[in-house]
Length: 295
Image 1: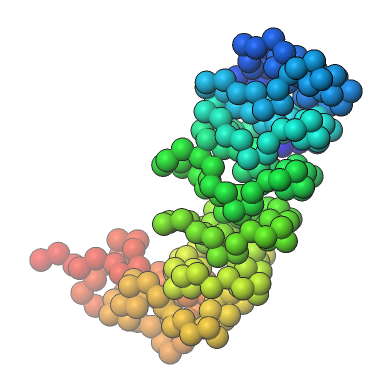
Image 2: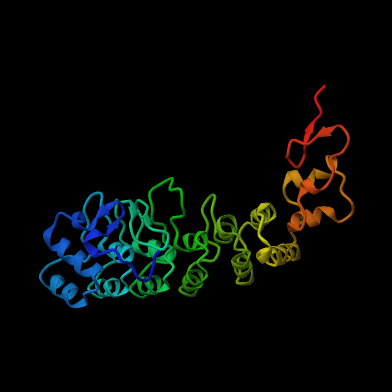
């Protein structure tokens, strides 16, 4: 998470596992990145006129634009975009930075500035990246990343509602997905944001509703989000999904004493499966089904 103001000076700045003082070997690129993180638009323009490349890249490094996000400097970000920086450019640098609301930021290998911006709480970075040609449907990242490499899915993963709306408004495919990830399921699974999943459905999301139902059914929430979970489940029922969807809940009547209507209370999250007594012949191993009493 990134913070509007930081007490860290630019000489102490880290981004993608690298100190600002070691950002690039090229002297002109080094001058340009320092001007960028300081938000010095005049110097950014001056250095580019002198021959500095706003899209300079070196092995194991990230694009200069990424440094502006790490420094949380919107002015520098915009100045570099105006100078010709490509928001879709990917690098091979990766690692943690030392700025942000939680004490740091992180960049994954292959990310572009647009993808990084999509997961950044300040939506100005994302708006600017899109304004200057950012591809909202791109996938930027090395294989087997532990996090999404698509802007919309990454914004959903972080529960950034404004960024999600910006991306969809700019033409992002609401149904974009990988083999294991999509927007509404990431919003629910990571942040418990059933309100975001509802918005996806209301705005045309139609990919794998059965999978969305499974994620919704299995995700617990605190009381403040309970009504959103129930609304999402009701919307899925209206679209033809039959609950329960998980085998555990489908077979729960075999193992626990369930009065009429109890299973939907469990699906909605109003009750826990362990709130209902086990049937004779099973003992409580803290699972929904319990375990057979050993001979």
